[in-house]
Image 1 (cartoon, one colour):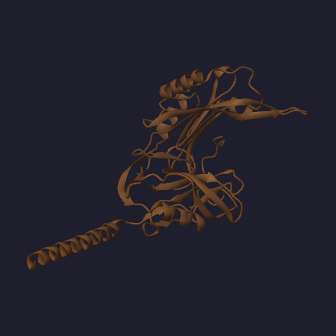
Image 2 (cartoon, rainbow, N blue to C red; image 1 turned 90 degrees about the vertical axis):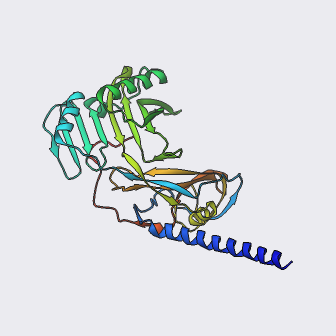
Image 3 (tube, rainbow, N blue to C red; image 1 turned 120 degrees about the horizontal axis):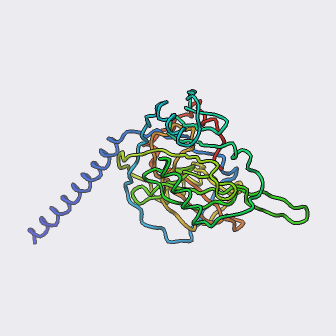
Amino acid sequence: MQRIKIFVLSLLIIGLISLLGCQSSNKSTSEQLSKLTVSPMDKTGSLGSIVDLAVDTQIPDFPSNVMVYKVKKPVITKEQVLVQAEKLGVSGDVRETSVDLNVKSAEGEYIVDKETGSFHYLTKEFNLQGFPLKSLLSDEEYKKLATDFLTEKGLLKENAVFKDVNKDNVYISGADSEKRSPFMIEVRFGHKDLNGIEFNGVGPKISVYFGENGKIIGAASVWREVEPYKEYPIISVNESFNQIKAGKATIYDVRPNDKGTVKNVKLMYMSDPVGYNQEFVIPYYQITGINSESRPFTGFTRAIPENLFEEKPLPSYSAPQGRKNR
């Protein structure tokens, strides 16, 4: 009996040592990770807030650690911009500003953001395109034309995938009854998933714009090249709910002091708009559901623990001087 007691006691001691060792290892790993610099959370999504969240879904099992990606700084030269502009039929001298390199002529303009490599290519027809299109092609035809164009001009990124054909650029007319007709067609390409997780936000996106009879009148991108950096621990789903209720989130379509019911939770990576000096691409929790009026809402909150990132004030930096993506 005495031997059994000693054996059991030994097992308990070993288990305790293992647990303490594991906790020490996790703490040590966390301490070894450097703080990530991130942009401030966007607060323009909604003037409302959520004070209570109910859950009406099966919460998925999420990993304890997720890869963080580092943004690769592009190398852009005047020679590269000039060659690309000529491929697009825009001729002239390359001018440099604090934020971009650009070529502008009577045929159109080609502008490249120096921070990200994102571009705007706009023809003179683009700015005149404001009335309903008389003839529309099929989605497959627009997809093929856009893919062929980007491939031929060397603008289709390696990790780009077809997303959709956007017909929401509409002309609204009619006195008695509203009539909506597209005045421009946009074919959109997104970024492949990163490590099986959706990469979205304000981009990554490449767009090709069409006018009448399938004529390409412009193209643009919001794009950053990224590479794996390090795995970081992430907070639990319940902690993400607490952050949303504490206002540490971007929330769309809720009223002040609203109540919400969660219908879906997922991880995603977020891309900042052009004009933000994004250094790291980190995971976020995206929470979707319905508010107190049974209307859909969406919230985004960082999945990285607060002790492992710090907000960096936005620089006095602006996007390229061109027509914004629609």
